[in-house]
Length: 128
Image (cartoon, rainbow, N blue to C red; front, side, top):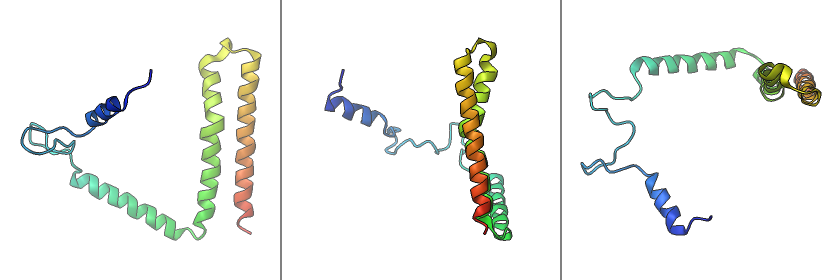
């Protein structure tokens, strides 16, 4: 059943920030009832800045940083997309899977390995 335009407008208004009764809007980052603010603490800010500086130094110190990114990208993309999910699925369901499901999962893993090898090969070929 389709919703009328009025119902869509009602849903959109429900998603907006609500009036807090003090003439302002109740935003998520306002202090809670105890007076503590959920905003970023100084320790957290310093830690984030140190991580950012370390990443910048790492990027500046590696002479061919795009090569490193290509290697990491080809390796992790295939691992996360094609290799790990079928392995975890087979590991979770084990003996209850039929030969067809096992063979399709094996095909996915082999496709991921082939893609990983091709990506790593292309990354090394880009050095020349």
